[in-house]
Length: 283
Image (cartoon, rainbow, N blue to C red; front, side, top):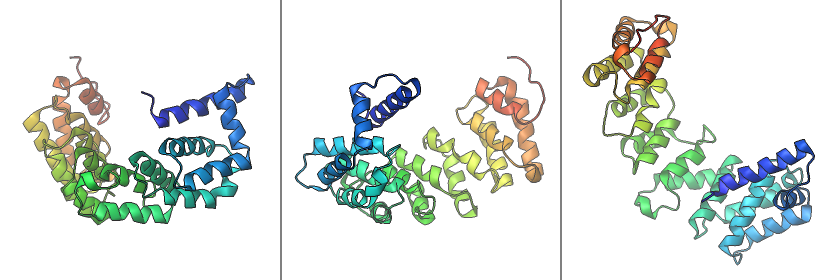
């Protein structure tokens, strides 16, 4: 089934292609262009969003259309205040998809009301199933503005995530500093954690604590081998350490990577090649 975001992308692509080729527009593309240039049609869509009596299907249709035309409409910005007010009114919609799209649209605008709401949901002690928006989506939306997510809040989620997707988002948006390095390296070394989260960590911590990261990477490689799923990411983390950090532990672990490369996966060999110009033997 085509998602709403896919549909928006398809319509925008059709509009752009038609402009470039000067071909006649299909009905969907023509409708979008007509809306984009019409103050009355945009105002009507916003009015439908603001009306509590509007059926969910029409709300979603209006959100979708406004989302598409926001990419190129010169009219929509003139009605931005009304749109923001309408979107704020949908934050508490009983429909999950309406809430998600409204919050997503507001987040892209850096709206403080939406940001406060998302932070309050992340701080809530309600069970995950009772939250109005999933934790992983709230983090991703706040992450649009790097200053909107509180580091201590993300650390708490990383330590005790409600699900794997939330852990991945918490790791992705945690800043790279000494306060986060130890928590992140604990996650990196925990095989029960999802690879999607662990694979992000070497690049985050390798230049914050090069020696600590190198020591852990060496231990993990020696314990699990070059064919483990995390091994290529460890090697890439080592390759990304800045020259000024080439301390003994780093050099020792790079040597371990080179010595194991021939027996590792293709991805591990490619990462190992980034450590030096040494030509590795064929497998």
